[in-house]
Length: 288
Ligand SMILES: O=C(O)c1cc(=O)[nH]c(=O)n1[C@@H]1O[C@H](COP(=O)(O)O)[C@@H](O)[C@H]1O
Image (cartoon, rainbow, N blue to C red; front, side, top):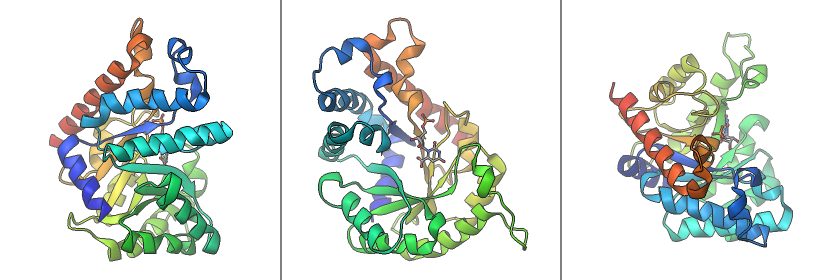
C-alpha cells in the first residue's frame, strides 16, 4: 500500500514534506529573467527546490491553487512538476482539497489518480459527508493510492466550525476523526498505518494529543510548522514511535533564502539548509 512507501520514506529521510506552493512572488528576479514562459519559470524553480531537497525529504505536497491561478500555463507547470517528481520516484501529495460527492467525486478521483495529474495522495475535505469519501475508496483498495482528509486544520478559523460541540459534548472535528478512523481501518498496510490519513495542524497541542491517541492507525499530514507558528515540540505530539506523520512547510522552505544577505542568488542551497534544520529539529524533539 502507498502508505507503506510513505512510512519507509519517513524512516529513511525524515519527516519533512516540502510544500510546493510556488507563488511568483517567491521567485527571485534574476531567475525570472531567465525564462520567457510562465510554465518554464514555475517548473524550473520547482526543479531547483526538488533537486536540492530530494534526498532529505519524505515527500512533496503540491498545492494546486498556485498553478490553477495562472490558467493553462500554470496547470502545465503543475503537470510537469508532478511528472518530474514521479521520475524521481518521490511521493506526491496533490493538495487539492476536493469535497464533492457521487459522480463528481469520481471525476476528481480520475483526474488526480490517473492521467496527466496523477499523484499518490490527494487531500479531501470530508465536511460534505462520508459519501464524499466513497468514490476514492476503489483507488485506495486497488490502485495503490491514498487520501488525507481534513480533520483538525491549522488555521485560526478552524474554531468556527470544527470546534462546535454537539449535544453529547463532542466537538465536530472529533466526530469527523472518529468516522474517518472507522473507514480507514479497512485499508491498513504492512506498516500498521492506513492509506486514509488525516490532516491535523500542529498549532493546537491539546487536540493533537487526543487525536493521536484515538486515531492510532491514521498517518497524519501535519501543516502549520514554521510560518504558521508550529514548532517541533508541537509536531512530536502528533507522531508515534518516531513515525506516523509528515510535516509540511511551504513558505518556510521556499523563502528560506530571504533570511540571508544575497540569499536569492542560491535559493536552492537555503531551501536545503532549511529542510535539514527542520528535519533535525523534529528528530531531536521526537527523541526527548
Ligand atoms: O491541507 C493542507 O495542506 C493544509 C491544511 C491545514 O490545516 N493548514 C494548511 O496550512 N494547509 C496547507 O499547508 C500549506 C501551509 O503552508 P505554509 O504555512 O507556507 O507552510 C498550505 O499549502 C496550506 O494550504
